[in-house]
View 1 (cartoon, rainbow, N blue to C red):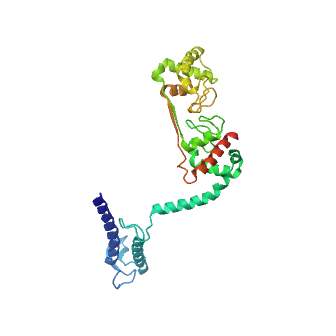
View 2 (cartoon, rainbow, N blue to C red):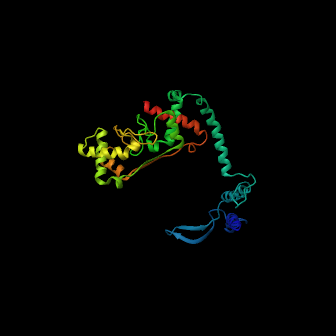
View 3 (spheres, rainbow, N blue to C red):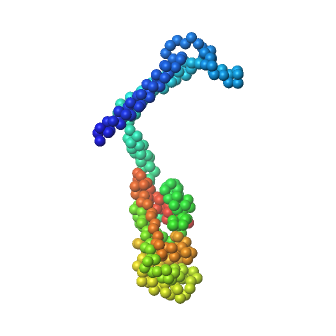
Amino acid sequence: MENLNSFWNWFVIVIVVGSILGCWWLLYWTKGVGEEQKQEPGEGDDTGHVWDHTIHELNTPLPRWWLWLFNITIVFALVYLAFFPGLGNFAGKLGWTQESQYRAEMAAAAERQEEVFAKFRDMTPEQLIANEEAREIGGRLFGNNCAMCHGSDGRGARGFPNLADDDWQWGGSWDQVVATLTNGRQAAMTPFGAVLGEEGVRNVVAYVQQISGQKADPEMAAAGQVHFQTICMACHGMDGKGNPALGAPNLTDDIWLYGPNPSDIEYAVLNGRQGVMPAFNETLGALSEDKIRILSAYVLGLSEN
């Protein structure tokens, strides 16, 4: 491995130095550099290339000021490579790395953020929800981290919960919302197609429709109730009102994560569902605990408006 690193180290050095020397040589190889010119710009020899019988291509040297710009560029490249990385494993005289600059910038940003978030640490959840400045900060955090799934207004989409109502799949208390943002959630609806069979799935769908207030075949719903209270109640409860501890939604209201149509319900019973809420304890970076408190207050505030 060391030989491989050594090879690529010298490979990069040769390419970089060779390119610079090649540019320098090219400048002094072409006419007009490194020796006194007998011709003024615009008075060079005719190369023999003619366009439209009147336009002749002349072998005219570049203007001196232009050539000096190229030379200054080469000198700048050599000075840069002496102080900054660029020659293989040579780190440069200043020892600069992009990682060290990133850490320094993040530390400086954390100091500035500390001044902003420190004032909110002693506030209660109720005070945070009511605080206008906290809501503005929470709105920016929500827009940068949550809006891509839940929408800019927090009303969600198919497969992504609406945060602006009072229905909470994992619970809507302060501690539960903070836990959701901190650790994320992993939702799993077990597929029951193989257990229930086609007829059993349709019967369960009819029963779910019935308890949610939709029209359903009474006989099919009655048969589905038996299956529901034998299998589905383990997560959704005997009455179908769900269990926030398991992330099992309430099936008796008119709020649906994947849709209220019989085909939507049938797909869920037949094939199951999978849902993931990412954890933000590390994603939010420095002062993530403070940011999660502000974000939790913002989300809870959405459901109160």
